[in-house]
Length: 77
Image (cartoon, rainbow, N blue to C red; front, side, top):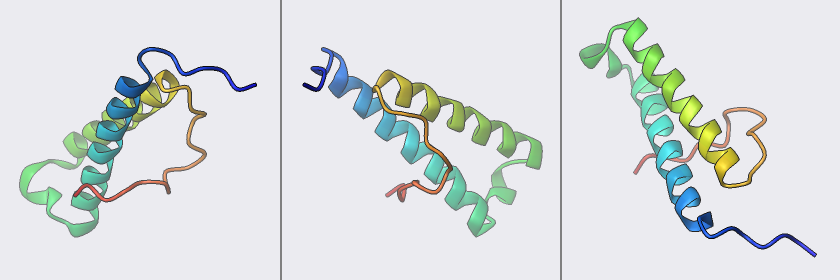
């Protein structure tokens, strides 16, 4: 029998969705080259690392295994 979801399952899923959208936004910004208007390379890298950490934390709070790679990103919009 699978375990029942905790009382904060919906909240952790929403947090995970938001963190994944944020990471996807930075990925799209990098791929388009628009990041050069707003960030230095070091600053953008720091934001991407922070977004990756947030996704990992929210995945663990949601009770999901860590993503094996970063290929499961969804579009930001």
